[in-house]
Image (cartoon, rainbow, N blue to C red; front, side):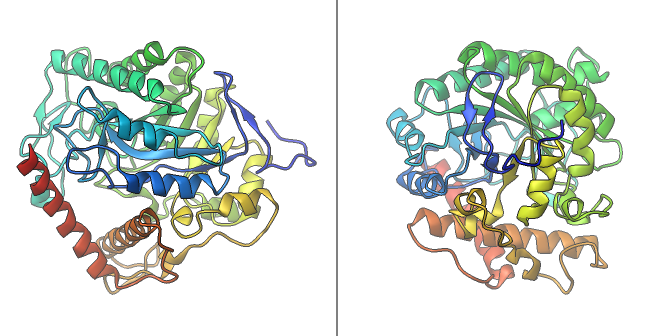
Length: 426
């Protein structure tokens, strides 16, 4: 629905179906923090990081990957929420919100996207390996009883999240992680009730959403992160995402965040959509979000990825294309950006990733090699992790990208070292 021109788009509050009201339309989008200790518990570093972000006056803060099964991590430093978690540490993280922005925990299971640093036997809907060399082992197929147990694990984690003082939960069903693997016919080759038709492939997601809602009740925000498409041949397609969004709205979710891609295809690297307008050039998945917006009806839509100018953000909201704007990397460099955007300051958001190089080619569609583009994207990701670590230490972020190849190599080494420490502790 188109908004009135007189309404300040970014500063307007948003009432969610559950009754919770977001103060404005800017969300700190999920980014993996990697700041848990060797026991997979929250740390003072996480508290410092989210206190810094909360002071920036965003309407919503969404955490990065929080695992529901400590046997399988997306990366070293993931927080795990289960019966073994340090609840005192989690409570401290939940209250790191002096600015009042609600903090939602993003609940996830990596499935086959759990690397060899953490397990040599990942699990998935079907034993389909990642086409990424030797870093990821071939997964084994989950038994039906294990799937039911994982549904319960998501529900139990959500119950703890609410009890410990967090403001909401987000179920991660995108980016090629376990729920996304169930949705995709490329990775879900099952012939039982959990595979085959789209309704069967979506069964796991919808069962998790029901379990989470039953665990937290009707007045607690429940969100889902969903791929607009996998952008892989034979994968989860856009028309399927539209149908799943319709089912999620019927299931009573409070917000759907749209993203795209998997480990095998980092969607935003390939500039896959037409760029006829400024906001289309900035927002990676805007062209795909429109049909999902229509399918959701009155359920709000959050779009994350690429917005870098207030003008494009205002336009997307004013046209009713989205309801919440998810911003990730700029928060790593300007933690207080939401405050100045809501106040009407028009300076663009920081975007130094355009200057990051690992290989001999630019990041983006001008590169001749998809491999080089992917390598540059990984270097950029590693550099932004460094900025998260700096904020978590109470330091200021770097103004310009460092040598991205060295940063990426150090990030990989740190992940392997922390995984060894974790296994030693266990």
